[in-house]
Image 1 (tube, helix red, strand yellow):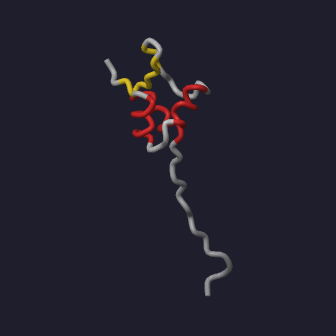
Image 2 (cartoon, rainbow, N blue to C red):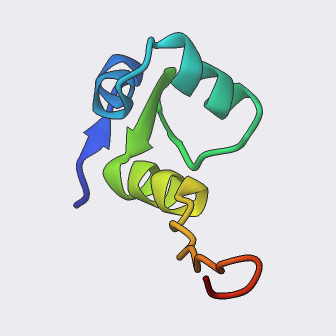
Image 3 (cartoon, rainbow, N blue to C red):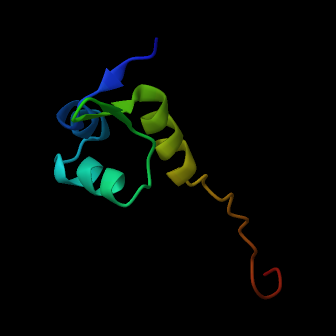
Length: 69
């Protein structure tokens, strides 16, 4: 069975306040599980959320303008 995180644990893992994961759950932007009346977020859901939001760097190519001096 996968580790299920509380809202506070998810916030700590993301480096945010607990308000952010609560909003993600309320807006259905992240997978979550109801355990009775408690909300738990699977660790893989956090990993997927971060992976989807990761932006890869762009390689820059420097072009010299004008002629060679």
